[in-house]
Image (cartoon, rainbow, N blue to C red):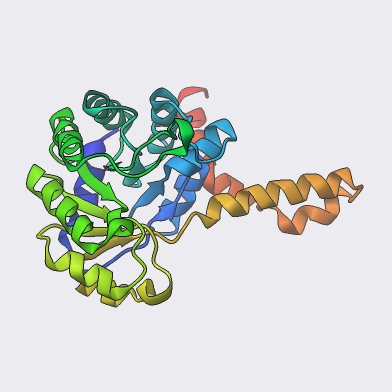
Length: 284
């Protein structure tokens, strides 16, 4: 698997002048669907990883090894450049370096490291690590990569602390050398404009609703990737639940066929033709 080429494609998105919406993926099948549909990049969020791997809420109880294993399964399924939410890097700056090493080996094209205090602290304390610790984490992340094409993104939701604090942090992370800034919690054009004016690197947004729905405007204001939530995983849960409930309630399987993937679509996303060709080449 050539991870460098897909990382180069992700960097091309950052170097462009338009904003793209990533396909939210969570397993090999969803990643192949996103790739087949033409998404430029895929997104595997920490919250979705907790749900997919553990069936747990987004309380950061997933381990690095569990995260890396699922990422590997997603990346080996196709050629979609994958960005991931690596949360706080699973510990201190040394842990962040290890996180980058493991996720690079798993095949990611881009990863974010955030400055939120994680996991949940005793007594419910929350907030942000110090700026100095945040900078140390960004530098450690950069030192952990061996492929220079891997994109390291500094993530912050410090807009909640005010614009001045947010700008102080993003400028410090840019100075540390990150390739882009993931601005979580932005809801207005004024916020995006103010942060973009202070940076020379691209922006990623954690949401693109309301005022921030205009992709053309986002592209003109430094945003290269804007998430749209994780509806695919939510739809997956509902489809499975509703199907099982219907069967449990006595609905005949034949009456549910129209709600299910066709044999043709299943063959497409499982890459059946490739496997059939391998059977013809090697087993006959």
